[in-house]
Image (cartoon, rainbow, N blue to C red; front, top):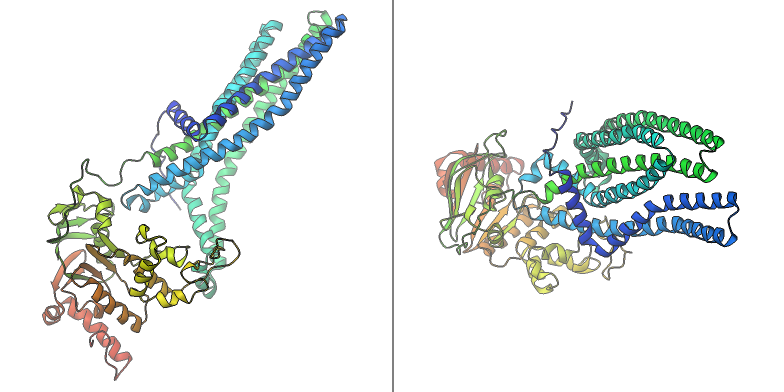
Length: 622
């Protein structure tokens, strides 16, 4: 059974949230907001005006008033009718315009904040991912819903004030009865909105799992295994089970709303009916005129409907603001890594990089991944990291890129603690290809140029990087060469017209493309190669490593690999096990030592010899 997520920490106060939403909307489209507010408030006065004009016309007819006076009143009533018909249309148009403008600004601010997170921690926290999903959903709509709530309440308040004044003139006791009967509606709607917002937070993990299964069932990446292993029914069952759980939670809230709102509607109908009976009796006694009865009936209905509208606007606004908390929590989140107020300049790498007693774990609830690692990466040398899965190699790479900080200990770049440096400046000095490299649904040229955005449109630099990675000829053979879209998820031809599907590369070609992207930085001070040839065949692997040996010559490099034949020429080989450095030295030293490295190297070499007797093992004879 999945645990219910803890309630989110309380956000800013209601007024602060409304102010933030209104400010965002106002900055997105100030003139449109002014027009929308004016028309909304005008709409609140029109029902009262129409009711009083109707009263005056009816009373004038009964009294036999002059035709000119009746004509003027009728003309005013007709104008009020025209405005009543036109204002909602104009209001809806301006609202849609505001919604688009505010949504665009909100998403820009949201993803600017997300892109500003320095490290990776938040992207590996389920609670934050649920917040981010709700922020994406609410950020584009909640600001406008908050503005709608404020203006809707204001419009309803104008209508209520006008009709209450009318009721007070006609019958103070009935005015009090209408208000007392409407009070429970306001309270109930706010409480229901709070319950719905809590429900949306509680089902967040369930909906995220449903999305995961839905994505698996509809993407090409999973299609082969799903069909081979006949997983469709199983995954669909999981998806539908999560959907049913989310639907059950929504249904429970809907049923509660049905019961509460139905009961309150009956109460309002009873009060309205009692009022009509009283008004008819009063008119029969001569206490009210025909026009008074018309105003009374309109006022009772108007106050009740406006109070319900006000309650629902309050409730919707309240719910929108509770969801807007997630947006504010993401966009105003403090730095995910502590940043120096005034970073120290990062010196050119001349001495090397040193890890001093580095301990790391992802949280206090997780086990230690690195345990007191001491390691020096000398300037201009190639250091290889080897070890079994889970030894801590990829985590060490994350620390070098400062995606995380060590829990204890320090990493020093020519003596400067990386905590004192600007992470952006550090990353500009690093070229890297990661084991879990990205496939971008962009053109071949763009896929490579992303390694250095200054190279977008600079064809010769992109082609040089592709040639070094051994993928240039393949890209020239594509239908539109480097301008070919590398995706079947979209349509795009070389001119930008949406009429030609893209193409997909093989996994090995994608890996070469990722390598070319890393090589776009011509002179990185640190080159990180995390399994750069894992998806390549033996011949391509040898070709890539010959190129990399030439490319990293004289450069400070960190090479991570499970294939020990690719690291034997490294200046220093470091063996990690259980988060500790257990051996280090060059290939000859470590094989002579007869320790873990020698054991792993022997296993790989023996595997090749046993499966291909008579052939020279590629793991040890080149």
